[in-house]
Image (cartoon, rainbow, N blue to C red; front, side):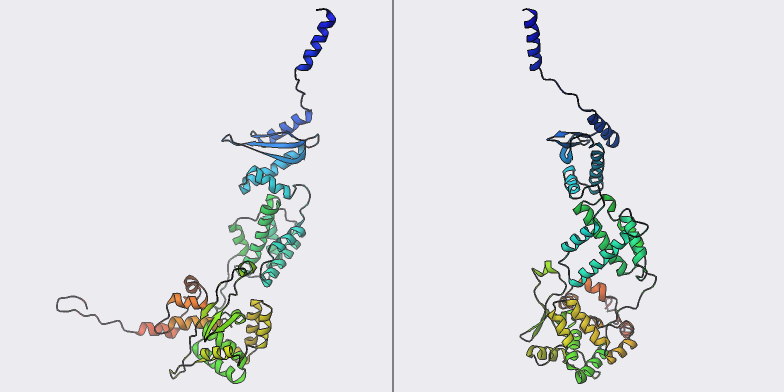
Length: 434
């Protein structure tokens, strides 16, 4: 073979042998930075013009995802920052690489957080709340946004909640439900923003014990809500029947049937019996509402021991349409807002001079005391009504009944209980106790 043929053959064979192109210098820089920042187990490569990230754990399993970052010079810092955000989510939220990447795609790690947009989206997601509950949530999130722009500017969830407490708890006593509900609403929003909308992990709310420190502890205990006594309820009913029959009807129904005041808006008399619809619900539970609850009266007795029939007469008049509930209660019921019904009932009583006198003589008495009085009478009736039955007609569980009503007793009841002599104990002819 001559010289020319040899050169041609050499060049032809060289073209057949594949040659690997050396990686650009920036790729080596990227991989060195990745190894330095995140250690072994993390690697990157090109996939259709984008960055493909691979994670190998200690068990040897491998997971891969494609990042929305172009594989090109200048991506080094963006890739390293993105992987840092992914690791934070994987470690702090217990997510897989794919889940963390999907969540991160919803909120890129660069740029300021659009808090107003997140608040609007969160409120839209909670639009099924009752009107008053939704309004409270909206107010708290507006306050939170003012805290986000105040100095010192919060940098994470813990700082935000501390700043919120400093700004908005001046008139909110320590340990009360006001502080607790506000902090829980803000914390719930922050968790939603991080876990559902990809906000940075640093905005997760602090642990529960940190929230407890902000809520504080009660420094004093207010007067307990008291049940109305049978004598006071009888006097109130006599006064109203002679002066305001519509309000008498409302008080007789709440006091003799143990209703929640809001339940005046969902009464269904049928066949001489009274049924009550549900008031503790939102639009999710309203789609499958509970069956109406049967309620039964606990009638009062006169000082002479003669029975009264206020509850039975109230039901008969209501079912026949001879007496209606007060206009403010009917108007509130027409709006569908159960809390408005209870508020109207409270306002009617609070403006009544006779009720004002009862409240002055009985610290802690409120309109809800009419329902509490029903529970008290049921427990002290002879024989007492079984707990499960009393709880059923009042619309809660026996555990709830004990928690709220189990502590009530009166001085006269204590004296009566301890004044009863124990049964006599003797010994029969065989020496056994009888």
